[in-house]
Length: 463
Image 1 (cartoon, rainbow, N blue to C red):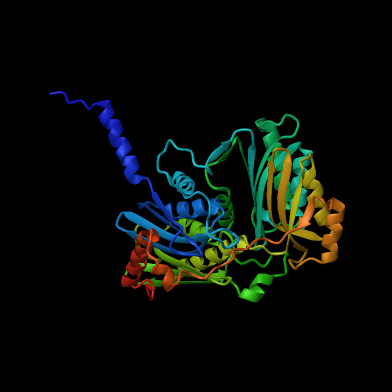
Image 2 (cartoon, helix red, strand yellow):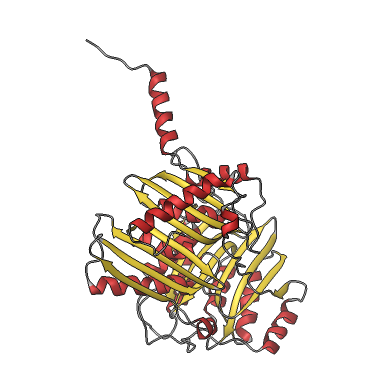
């Protein structure tokens, strides 16, 4: 007997599976006078916590508190969020829910906002030993080879540099596809990155076209620097300011890893100065090291952030050796420090033109400034870039030198602008909790997560 399935019934079944597996987002703006509560629950899968945190980070939201819990095959997060100024979110919540759910969708036919193909650009990934003036040399080479830089991210840490640079042909405005040109770009950049000092390791230069952003750019930066083993201590770094100005005030990032044998978890604790994207950087590193976060709490008090995660390997086992424990500590400290905003933040906003970045970074170099981090973007013919600069030894630069650089590049184009850090408000009070109303439902959901963590012994109090 032949059995056939009606095509429509199969389609409905597939749609049912998609609905069942699509994360659900609930937003409550009534529970707390100082923060917006965002609850995300979904089927459990590796990396879902990172996707949730990235979705909130991409919306420029600050997570002041959070509770993470998974039960079997289900996963639930509750986040207390504000904008960068510490205010509740006033955006249309329905649009916000749609945006977050779209970012978290499991539907393979959907295209994520941060997963896109830049079909008119060529992507360069660089890693190597950092030194004064290196970025100026990189941009000078690209300018000489008629490469126009459209987007770029540059991080430095522990004597190493990592960069993702998206370029196009400066004459035609199209993607660089000629193999001879690509090979010439790689050879020139490898020569620049290698330098004259022959420090450890060969520089890495990769060219891909079209520039495909399968991974969020910040996550990819963590990946390439992790692969470069920037978390290892080195004696060959030229930068002498081993302790940053921020760490002199707040202390170095404190990371501890302990095993809880009774529950089969490794407990990871991170405490440091709070800053934008801190939670993303920590969760990104744990995820790419193939650890699963089963439970966790996030809290911020004034400028200090405290994060605690209960993790296992993908196979369900905890950290098994002292060497692995030390490696996790080093990697998390590196993840926190890579994006540390040391030095003076300079914002450049001007009409884009050939050789602009080569000119700007050469001016920095000629005045004894080193770039510790850079974000470059070009939109509608306008260059909007930010640079963090120090002196040649990693200290705060002389204000007179900064003034001289601004005068050279143009006071109307280059400005000093301190990074906007999250403003923290007090958490919900007892009177907030007893106010009832529409927020009571989400309050109870948040309390369920807290009580569950308390019963598991993962937090000291569920109050």
